[in-house]
Length: 93
Image (cartoon, rainbow, N blue to C red; front, top):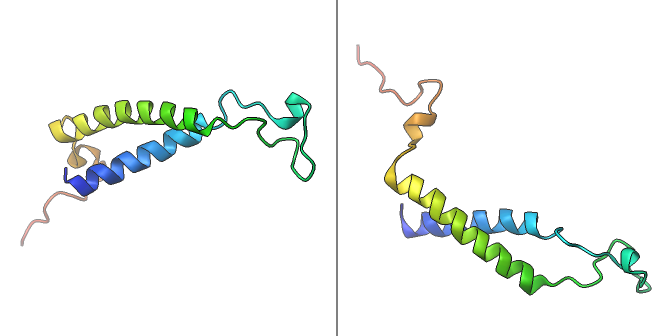
């Protein structure tokens, strides 16, 4: 795995985890009873974006270590995922 591939993999994992973490423990302005004029009642009351970014980073590092370990150790390779036999060399005739 190259450095670029590792960075792309980590960025994708971080983004996916972030979108999972964002709605967790969300308190909306409607739930809090303090709707700011000009905003929707479903807008967050207190976003706590820094805390959610830290939680995301912790989970992303753990998932990245697991996935990168599988990729580097070649426990599962691309050829294992070739269910239709398209990667087999074509017989020269």
